[in-house]
Amino acid sequence: MASKKGVLVTFGQQTGRRAIVCIPHAAAGAAVFSPWVKILSDVATVCAVRLPGRESLITEKPLDSVESIVARIINDVTAIDAAELTLLGHCSGAVIAYELAHELMARGDERVVRLMVSSQKAPEARSADLPSWPGFSSRQELVAYLRDTGWTDDRVLSSEKFVDLVEPVITADFRAMSNYSKPPGRRPLPIPVMALCGKSDDSISDGELMSWSAETSAELCVSRFEGDHFYLFKPAAELIAFLVQVLGAEPRSTDQIGMLPSVSA
Image (cartoon, rainbow, N blue to C red):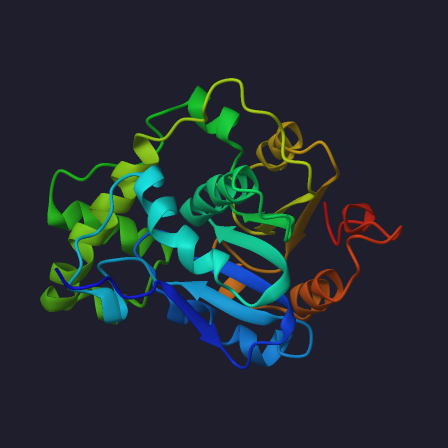
C-alpha cells in the first residue's frame, strides 16, 4: 500500500520559532493562504493544510468526518519545527482547528499558544441549530450556492470539469460539518481564543462570535475586519497589522495576547 502524502504545505522558510497552521474553508486548498507568506514571513512560518481531494491530493478520497480529518492532519502538525503554534481555521476549518487544538493538548503537545477561529460560531451554538450546512438536490443548486456565497469566480463555476472536481469534495466537507457535535463534558481550552470575521459578513452575528467564550478558560478576543465572508484572502491593512501584532507577541509573558484590544468588535 502506498504511503500517504503529507497534508501540510509550508510557505517560505521555517523559522523554528513560531508557526501558524491555517485550515481553509470547505473544498478550498492550501493555496488560498500562499499570499500570507509576504505578510507574515518576519514573524512566523505559514503552514497551510491541504486535505484529500484537492490540489496535489486530488486522487485521494475526500474525508467526511471531522474526526478523520483531524487524524489525517495531526501527525504532520506534530512534526512542525517550531516552538510555538497558532492554529487558525476559516469557516468549516475553524471547527477542525478547534478539534485539532484539543487533540494536540490531549497528546501533551504544549506548543499551541492560541486558537484563531474565523467566520464560524462556537460548537455549542452550532449544535443548537443543526443541520446548519446545506445539502444539494442538484448540481445547479450547488453551483448557485457557490456563486451566491462568492466561493470562487463565476467564470470558474461555468466549467463543468471544475464542478466535477469540486462536487465530491464540498459534499464530503458539508457532511463532516453536518455530522459534527462537540464531545460531551469537554473542558474549555486553556489558551486564548480569537474569533474573527469580516465586517460585511452577515452570515454570523457578534453574539455568535462571542459564543466562543465558553471554549476558553483564558481570554476571548472578538474582532471584525474590512471585507466579506472571505476577508482573510483579501486582507486589508488593519487585518495585516493585527496578524503581525498577534503573531509577533510573546504569549507566555505577562503581556497576554488575549488581552489585546479588539480591532473592531
